[in-house]
Length: 516
Image 1 (cartoon, rainbow, N blue to C red):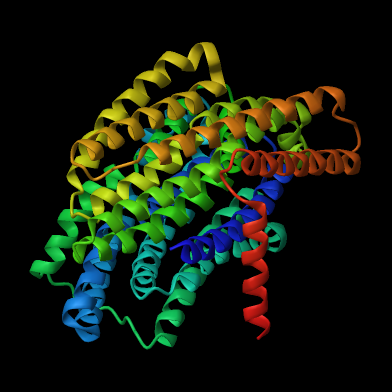
Image 2: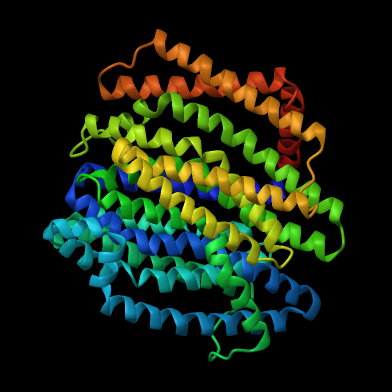
């Protein structure tokens, strides 16, 4: 599981780094204003579908069913099921896409009510949304093919294909902009073109795995109906975080112009650890839990889930400490260029700190949700999710006036904490989550190590003030990040969480095996 976790996490990290480059180009060319706000709203809908289906509900419903059919009935039956599911999905999504294109003005009014105050943002938002909306068809089909590859335990190519989203997006911004009205149109066309590239790569990977997936004519067989029954509630259950972010966007359009942009760039930095660790944990844990539970190995399932919790907390908690301490320098160095001013970067850093507070909760939701899905229960996360959506909306209304662009991020973070607490309590009551006293103490020591590292980093920042000049700032930030990593590693060793000598010995042993 750890090997697959690192494989998916590694490819996702590379994708996130390329996504950071793409976002830097968007910030430099469009800044934080009406044009950027309109593009981000146009990007929100297909991006939400990407995360819901690519990392959420469809994967949670499809992979256990596909793995079960593959194990019990053989490869041919599993292939038929996947092809039938692809046919049903394409028919439904094409219908939804046509409706979306026709009624896009009404859709934009719903997700960006603040745009109605200025006709320019509204008209541009409608035009850009019509360009990006077909991406949902492509990415949902790609999610099914990726689910097949994950079910076949070919995690690498399924994760690597998502690189195409950012590679094509960067190319569109750099090379298509001169031929279109502005950069926002180029970025929007890049979104849809990337969907074509992603689906094509995944279909090619499935063909190489000798698992071709030509869609079959739609038919609601009993197995397809079971898939739909599991998937529909899972859209809310596993997608609460994404729906909450959409609520944040709706509230953001009612705030001063540029607020949506400030929140977006803050969320992009928050998504580096969240996307890497959350996607890796959820993607690799679900098949493992399903396999153990199908075999009646309940102790092994508990052990796998506890290991996943331990992995993500060891990597997430220091990220929280680092983001809280270094949010300002991070945003200035990464985005404070071109049309995105240093003042914009500092405002966005405030939103980043608010998002970072909820980072462990956002990631743990990805760990706890598979525990329900692997047992065929997609209803419980729905009921929890509905309550969390209501809580997030109420918190947004409470915070939007006094906290402005910090309000929606803080509301999402607090809602995520409530979400993970509810899921954990329900799992413990069902004896589906059993964390020993030793594991709990280990997690407590991890939190203490991250907190102490953050305090030491804050002291170092006070002694070495943030300099001026981009090259010196990059060096300063890199030094601070490196110092934080060294301090945290040393503290993990001192607290007995990880043994540096053992890790080095295992690395050398792995290196010798590869050379041999």
